[in-house]
Image (cartoon, rainbow, N blue to C red; front, side, top):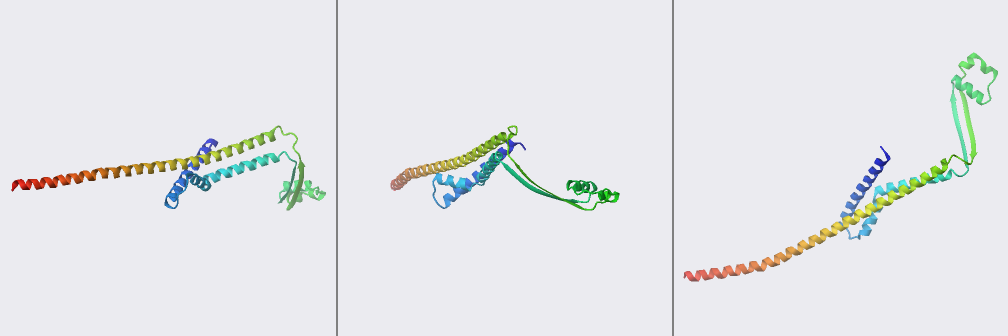
Length: 216
């Protein structure tokens, strides 16, 4: 999988996580308390797991930059290695390395079956970088670019979550306003219909009485 594909997938996951969280927060707000859009956006950013992953990437990039910067300083390395075996070649080389090889080790039987030999190596190394073919400088620049990219992605992801919250809030307000308008129109229509129906009923009753009188 290429780097661009990986970034697209991560961006999609951030958006999906943001939308799911926004839906949850919106339901909570409607059911429990009334909050401003700014407060909802703040909570969405704080509780989004995708943004936490983006922050972790920023932290990782900063640590890589610190490691690259540390290569400019003097360095002290220490280590130790332990090996043990009974191979003829290994035993022969280990005894030579330890300066512990004697005439008895030239015996044919000893050469073929030397027995187990233990070899312990320890080292202490100090150094300071002088010139590494601009490798250190290139490493530092790449690490700095990595930090910039990670921070930009995290900032962009936060802005996307905030924008999604604002869009959801505006849609909610528009839906409420439309609902209020519809309710007002329904009430107005009812008020117009009720007097008209009352008038028709009065006319019908009057006409009915007149008809009865004519028959008599």
